[in-house]
Amino acid sequence: MCRQLITPAEWDHHGGWALGDRIEWSNRACGLASLRMVLLAYGCEAPTVTELLKLAVKHEVLTPRGALHAGIANLATELGIHSQAEAVPVEGLLGRLDDAPLIVSVTEQFPEDGRKGGHLVILRGYESGPDPTIHFRDPSAWGQENDQVPLSRLSHSYTGRAITFAPLNNGDS
Image 1 (cartoon, rainbow, N blue to C red):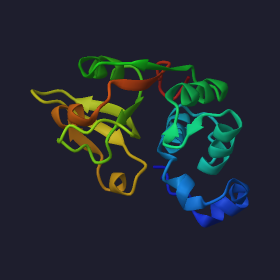
Image 2 (image 1 turned 90 degrees about the vertical axis):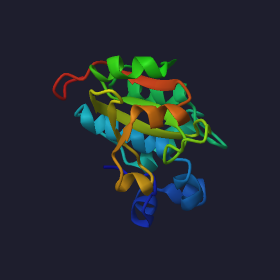
Image 3 (image 1 turned 180 degrees about the vertical axis):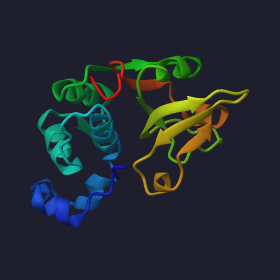
Image 4 (image 1 turned 135 degrees about the vertical axis):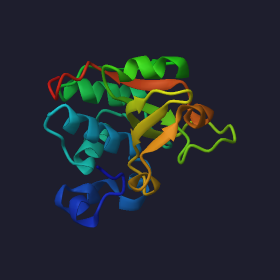
């Protein structure tokens, strides 16, 4: 599991200091940490979050609020996994998860109060049922101890926007 909180050792080793404040950047690195986890799942070389951050700055992927979905998709493709940013309705998530993980925009900790998006997590599978259980990887501190949520709860904070990937075939891309 990759965390979006960049350690001081990683930050210093990979020259993150040139970008400014480590904590400020860590707070906006959920999409890049998610991308790193996807790269690892596909068996690709996976740069550190700091290295991905430097690539994201170079390619103008980041905004003051975080990473652009299309920018993350372009980085994934550049790093070996065909990807695209697209709208995926909540009803289409399970079908997509049959073939590949997704990075989706949700509100951190999946609140049920109607707030939408702003945090990127990986959906990696599901268990069928009346209210399917979604398995996810969340690079935030909360996500280190939580890894599944009912689809009904996810739907409250899901924006309908996702980063989709080529089918995952036993680790081959």
